[in-house]
Length: 327
Ligand code: SF4
Ligand code: MG
Image: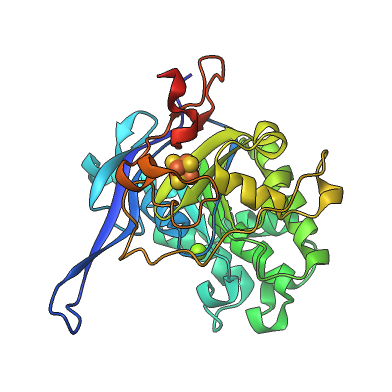
């Protein structure tokens, strides 16, 4: 079975205004990301804020135009789609935002917020739409009452995110991009939403790209994980491999910061030097060399590429010169 979504060399560069020196700079928000997302899986996308994970997700959802690379959905390049197939594609891929409050119109009652995607796509008559709205409220655990009449300011954070998810599901998509969907919620509410997402995925056969900076949340949700640093994927692995034996020094640092009771083996905490550099001043060679505890001469001169970690590592990929002895 071919992957549902294939992202190839996806790039988003911005030309920034000239500073005092007069020279324009290039901001490399996303810099050649390639990922395949299998039907029915959850691919986690992790990294610090500013690493390009949201930009990658927004391009995958066609909310943002790439400056390079391409996106295939069911084997078809989405950039070439026009008319009816373009409209169908827009239904199939939906984006759920971190803050549903900002993305939901406060002047519309919940029932209208859920009906709206159907209206835009001219689906069903009034009665059919009302039936679908009630069915969806049921499905997200808010049915059987008067929830449809409420406004977003009358809802709790968790209820609002349920509505955000419901709205994304109204058009029966196949692929959902979830951008930090629980980061704005209390920890007690987070697990309810995560469990709802898992349940919906199983019931509706959904495929998820799950974006988060929180490694515990990503661990709970994902089948495979891609780790991003400064616009690039630096490691890609099955969830268990990644947490038990992280290969890239950046992944090792992220995993070592997870509280020990959540990990099988105890590992020294690796504290990285300094902050993540600006995407408009990406270091030469390996972009991670300014913070890497293992950096050597080659790292400053030559950029590593994402490739199999070792001949028997299967689909596991890492981008680091420490693992290039096999090639
Ligand atoms: Fe560290 Fe060098 Fe590997 Fe980059 S390539 S992660 S600097 S060891
Ligand atoms: Mg973000």
